[in-house]
Length: 189
Image (cartoon, rainbow, N blue to C red; front, side, top):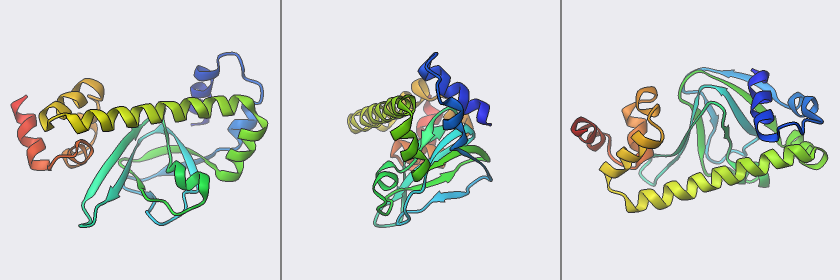
């Protein structure tokens, strides 16, 4: 599992690998089952997760307790509730596994140590933050202006593997449409 994270970091840093073993030593390996809750709204987020294998859902509940999925995160990506993780304040989002997953987790103390002492780690973190922010802004701006059918087409073009990997209910939540509407639209394509 740690080898997957090592290759991920090498891919981003090239030959600038001083302290790589120290960075890797700060992560603990976690194996989860399907639908395992990693973070619940109101708890303080204690970890940033690297997904070596598996799939995570980041979601919120509305005032009627309907689930809305902000993101579906798969292998070779990072997942956390960064505001809570950074501030120590209660999380406003939930994170759970969609399928059995192999995760590498770094806690806040280890994370801060790496940010302060390993310049390469700071560089990787900034790349992750920039990519995450750009993805979120793009998705929000795009989804606001797209019809339900256009959102489904976007998913088919940009994240087609999700259509066979996760449930229709989860995809509908991610696209911001009712699962019955999702089924009808999918049948049209």
